[in-house]
Image (cartoon, rainbow, N blue to C red; front, top):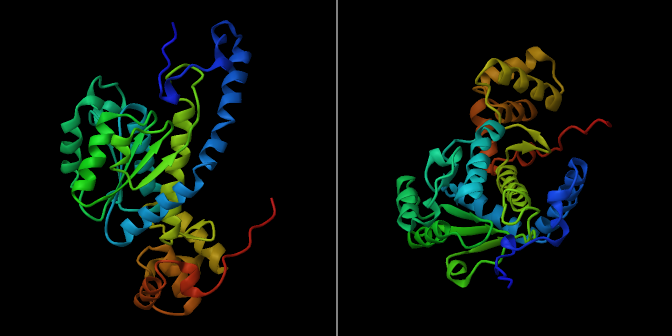
Length: 307
C-alpha cells in the first residue's frame, strides 16, 4: 500500500529510485540533472520575489528590519543570508536578522522538536523586538512548519508585514498570515524528504535575490559596483580607494584624500568628486536622491571593460 504525502517535498522521485545502485559518476549526473531544474522553479516565482524586494526596501526606508524565520535547513539558510549582508553591503547587522528554531546551537546541531514548539516562535520574535514596520519572512520548504506558522501569526499581530518562502503549497492556516507568498515548487528530492538539496538551493537563490535586490534599491551600488563601503581596515581601505579611482578616474592620492574627507564612506567620496562639493553637501545630495549615487550625480558608472 502506498501512502502519498501531499507535500511535494516529501514525495518520492522516480528519476532517482535506483540511486543506491549507481556509480559515483551516475550519482553526480542524477543530482546535477535535478539541480538544473531549480532555476526554472525560482523563475516561476519571479513576480512574488520582486514583491519581496519591494517589501524589504519599504521596511528599510521606514526604519524597519527584515527578519528570516525558519527551522532546520530553512532556518540555517536564513541566518546565513542575514549574516552575509553586513560584509557584502556594509549594512548595519540589525537590518537583516535570521531567527532559527532552537537558537544558535541549532546552526550546527539538529534540535529535535524545536520546530514544533509554537510558543518558542513568539518568544524568539519578542526577544528580537519584532514590531510594526518590520518585514518578517518565514522559510519552510514543506510549507507546513509549525514554528514558522506561529511566527508569522505573531508578526502579523504586532503589525509587521509578512512573507513566506516555500517549495510546496502551504495550507490555508498558514497562508492566512502571509502578505507575500514566494512559492518555488522544486518537486521531489533526489533523496526523499532531504530538503537541503533542491529546496535548499532554491531557497538560497530566493533569499539572496531579496536581500541583494533591496540593498541595490537602497543605493548600495553604482551600476554593479559596490559603493556603500566603509574603509574600516587596511583591506577595505585599499578596495575603497580602488573603487574611487575607477569610478572617478582619479589617481590614488586624490582617491585617498577624498576618502579621508568623506569620513571613509566611498559613495560620499564619489559624490563629492563629481559634484565638487564638501561632505555635508554630498550627504544631502545623496539623501535627496534616496541614497542612489547615479541620481545624485546624474551620470552613468564607468563602462565595463570587455572580458
